[in-house]
Image (tube, rainbow, N blue to C red; front, side, top):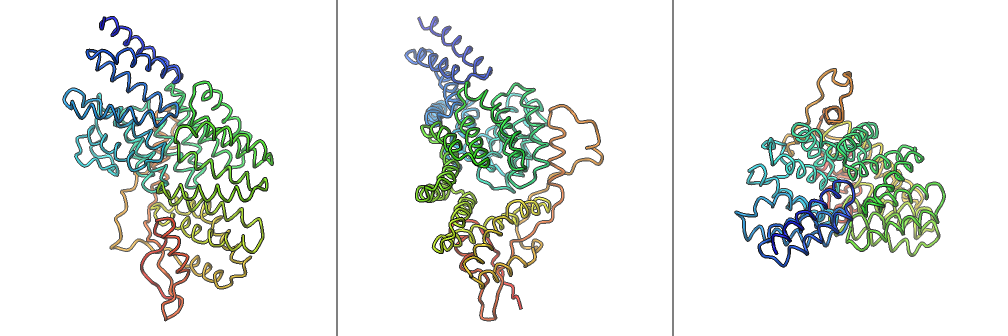
Length: 520
């Protein structure tokens, strides 16, 4: 009997893999579930049962059901620990898939721990240091694909946490490794480099890299990856004043992700369409799209994505005149980002809140807005001092920091706080110091592209041109230290001392160096 069941299970798993690779994860999940249920009663089919469980959990994660995926992967890891000699080889793939679901639920530390353990298993590096520069990642053969997946996922963790300098380093390590070992799988690595470029205000390189990533995903038949890249491109188009192109890309995404059951991607596309509708002056349409996106995510504990969506919903509620509801949503979003350890996201949420309060014009609202905006703007501005490449610092300043600081200046002026205006001017006029000799040693910069490389005919979607573009962007490096604290008087009064302390307490990131420099 078990032999007959074994054949049935084998056929079901094979059919499920075929459906999964064909872009139908919901149908694949049903087939894997049938296989697991068929094998479970037979001890002789324990290995087949385990494989069906792993496949079912991977499909569940793909569909956005992360709690179910996490529970199953943890069960499989426990079995691997109980039988290390027989089942130890399963651990890398299970750890990678577990990390993806942990990341989606906001368990960033646990996700990174799983990925560093996976990398250590694959490279023989006992440290499992996720910050390595790529040495020891020359693994080929059977380990090449899981190693690349682990590296790309590690860079995704850094992107999600908005640790931009670290994200830059890890995305380039992942891109270089994938390009060298399996250039046909380079799409996701390129997408992460493009995401970092977009988030740090480098729109031109982001578009070039994303177009390369899309071509690579389409050439490799990665429909889910292509949907992710189109979402990145849509964000870029919206940021650069091309809403019609953004909307067309998002409808292309929905045409695939909706029928395939890709919940998170569908929700993200709906959220972005809602943002575009709000920008067009269609608040009712925006709220409808946000509600649909929220309904998709809510059952699956997708905390980071839900929190971003909460900020969007709050903006829509505010514009509809439901200011009390909006205030509650924004406060909840900021608290959630704090709980997730996403201090920069919390600061950005406070800037959104401050901008909405500014529109009220009421003295109480302006005072609240000022309290939110100044520490948040100082935090957002401080990010550039952690970026080692001068181009990246300048683009962050222009694209991200300046709008935040302008809001802080406006609010200080509207509340007639002349002293605060003067201190904001003082700290913004201070120069950026070069990194002192006893400061932290910066990461080794990426090698620049060979001279004349970009004049060569563009290669196929194997990441070569993308790697060169990314390397060229990161090539010019002049590390700087965070700015010192400015002494305003010989008595030791520090400019913006209370706001700096509040920023560092609220957001958990350093805003100023401990050194003190007199201004007289």
